[in-house]
Amino acid sequence: MFAIGCSLGGNLLTNLLGNLGEDCYLSAAFIIHSAPRIWEIEETISNSMYGRHDKNFGIKMKNLYKKHFDTLSGHYQKEKGINLK
Image (cartoon, rainbow, N blue to C red; front, top):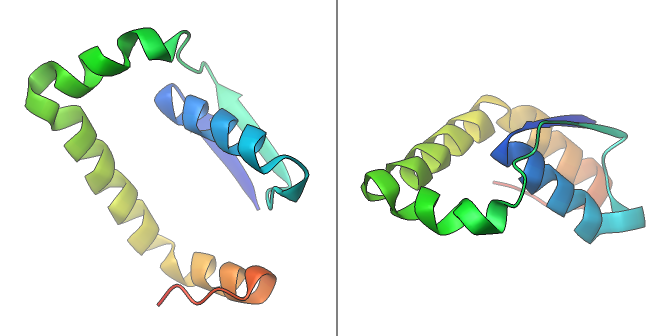
């Protein structure tokens, strides 16, 4: 399994890779233009447009999860013994 992260997704992917280290389940990762100094703009992004960015991000992640549920479910069950249902 591999992952691609762009902009804020690149920051999230970088954080995931750093936290998992050797235990990372990804075979490869590609990060495209991660946002520099995200800590300086995080509050602005969250508070601008009345939180729409966070809401839209959550909706898109939920839809992406639903779209790939069968693949993710099979992987986590086989590799980690975790049932996502």
